[in-house]
Image (cartoon, rainbow, N blue to C red; front, side, top):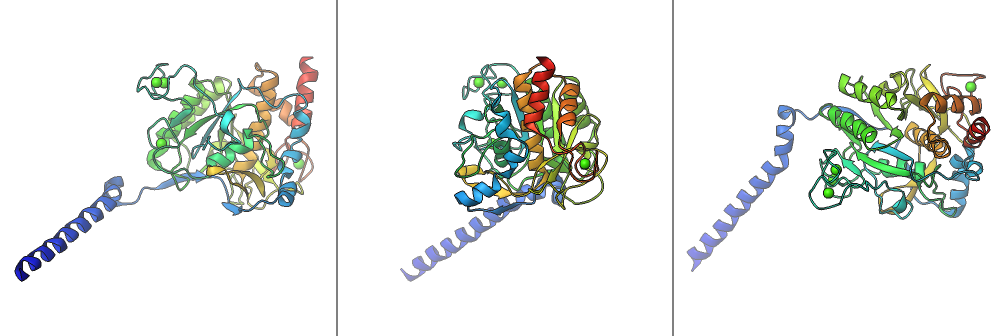
Length: 372
Ligand SMILES: [Ca+2]
Ligand SMILES: [Ca+2]
Ligand SMILES: [Ca+2]
Ligand SMILES: [Ca+2]
């Protein structure tokens, strides 16, 4: 009996040791196989300073709703809140479109039957009903690895429903959002991910997006495949909007150095350039990027800061313009935005804010005057 019990106990210990060994190997295996033992090199990620305020009372909301007011979105809504045929691709960390504010805003690929395992529209992606998760290599941001909050927040600033009590509201609440996830659960991407970004850009262009919102920073010059994809997007008349960057330094992030890409700096509610906002001759416009409100996965609203969020405001204003005039060229969009922006910071075009703070009301007015 005693020796039997001893053998049983010994067996249990052995099994526990073996199990521990297996778990340890499984935990470290992915790291060991990535880049032959060294951790993958971070090439970029979310363009934000992180969430900073997590409980929004109506009073705070009223104060923080300054972003929509500053770009004169409510005035522009008298003409248009956006058209559901205008699609903005959000290349980011994925969108939680089950958040009620975003539920009806997600783009639906009507040529694709979801969940049947067939690439019905033969675009190379099986069951891509709202976009594609290039991070996981699956059709769905909400399944697989957990979402970083950033993409949902950006999507909300572009097109969420407007809710006065929480301060949440997108600049163009009736346009559609294409969800192209490239960032991981930490909001990062790695050197080995550049081709995912190139493919996401190509997907946006090939599947009908008019605007690509690229609220991600990169530490290094994008490789030729990405530059080629961006140039192709621009040639096809797809507006590419990106961050100035959040390092508070001279020189914008490399996406913004590519000719034709719109680079956006951040201002605060006094319309002063944010201290973190990078500057340079490539900065085209400024928009609200300090303590702006939007939603995060599971539906909570928070306030956060970064040129990512300024970028989303400019995408929203451009989406309103395209909602009024679908055949507007990229030069046309740029010209209207430049002519109607409100001069802030140093007089005239300046390195922090470019042509100035985008103004949806004046832009729509100029467009309807021009085409009427
Ligand atoms: Ca497909
Ligand atoms: Ca299908
Ligand atoms: Ca996934
Ligand atoms: Ca200025």
